[in-house]
Length: 101
Image 1 (spheres, rainbow, N blue to C red):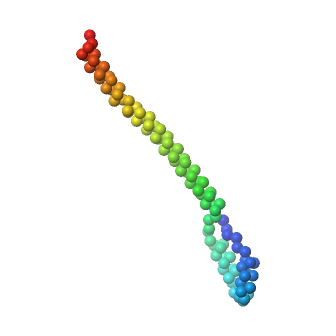
Image 2: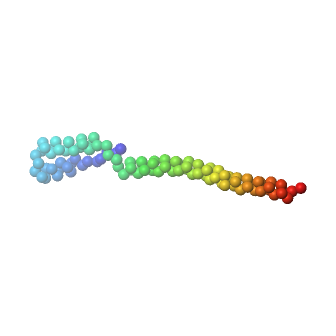
Image 3: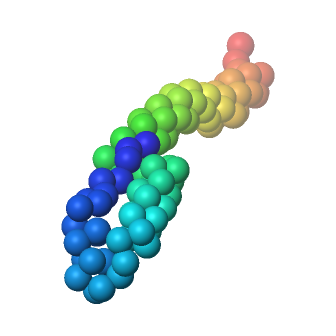
């Protein structure tokens, strides 16, 4: 994760312009700076990186699913033709029994 940039000089000048005493200005500045350093914030770059990683993982999973579906499609096609071949075989045996020599 990235750190958040904090302009302490601008912060101090803004507080001084508001007539806040110097010791309080330093205390506020230190407190805000430490809170920013302790924060573990995600940047847009971090989020984009994580999204690309997630998309890659999803694409990889779908490739495996596509391969499985292709295999299943081939098996279903075979199962679709098997009854037809079975009926044709039985029909040829019946026809041979009745009309054969």
